[in-house]
Amino acid sequence: MIIREILSLIAFLIGTAFGIMGMIGLFRFKDPYSRLHAGSLCATTAVFSYLIALLLLSPSLASTARLIILIVFFLISAPTGSSIVARFIWESEDAEKHRSSMAKEDKSL
Image (cartoon, rainbow, N blue to C red; front, side):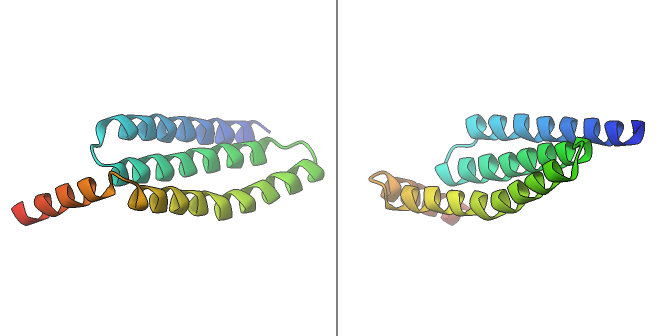
């Protein structure tokens, strides 16, 4: 039992670290695509780590099955949500400004 609790504590700490890194990335990066990447990648990893930790601590088979269903649903819905947000950014009014600034940065490399 103590090993499961230690592993779940490690998973909670990993999830918290990724969540904090994702928030820092949302504020530090300049263009919306980098912000989206930092936020979605770190948030997905953080939530997945929390769900793994809860899976390790689940007391019954019924709660374990519910958590597995949540994990599968989250692994399907998180990339879909990020794709929708990226499409919205691409089609927004400021998209041309961001695309032209990214093209200027590419030429300077």
